[in-house]
Length: 347
Image (cartoon, rainbow, N blue to C red):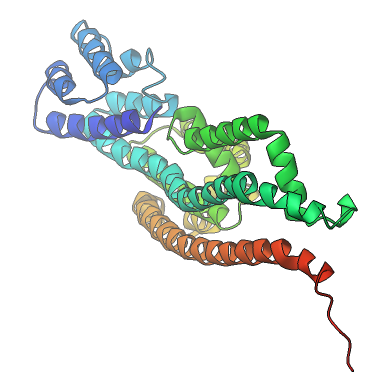
């Protein structure tokens, strides 16, 4: 889903919750929201939701027809809210959870945007210099240097670029387009981006903190709705963007369904943050939803701090990289001159 439609979904949950809390009927609430939705396809789907609900269908059942707009785990939570009569509260909490979902990829895109812009600028500048400066100068050096292996590396690279200029430009544009797509916020792009950032130092820590916040939000929300434990863990597994965590939650769910206490089942789920496992071990059951809500805020704050720290680190590293590239270009350009001006030994 695009960034525009993701924001539409978050606003839709929040505004529908407010209208239901004000006492408006569900079909009328849906119809009143539709004209203000910016995404044409999302607006059309909301109008169809209103028609289905007005015909007697449940909101969750109607939403399942549009998996591109309403993820399965969101619909499961909404179905639980319909059963418990707390749909308005569930929608409000879903808007918060959906915002956390969006922030995970958004924070990482913010971290990657500046480095990618600088690196692509440098790559384009290198191609331009190879064509306009280094390749023409290569003829001057060839008159004096007969062994090609002794040519500076910058001229060897320039020769390759100019001899294959079409392929180099095509590859550059393809790589640029791929990165623009990756940072676009689309559904497939977000999934790939989340897969990439898990292996990038610094960004992986931001992902873990944001994933912990999302897990706490959904967990607290489902506990407040008294969702049965046999349904809770499978739904939590759908909420996470980490495959290992998903497998461990599914395993814990099977253990809980077999009668194992939640705290004991979570002991083997090492991907679940330790502070969450300790909460289930030591906090009274009736206070766990409140504690999880507070933990979600803690994870979000930590992710924000890490994001700012990463941004500063990237700026320093890119500045050093720029300086190094300039020094190397100057060195490789003038290094052959020592052939013509050999240094004299001591008298």
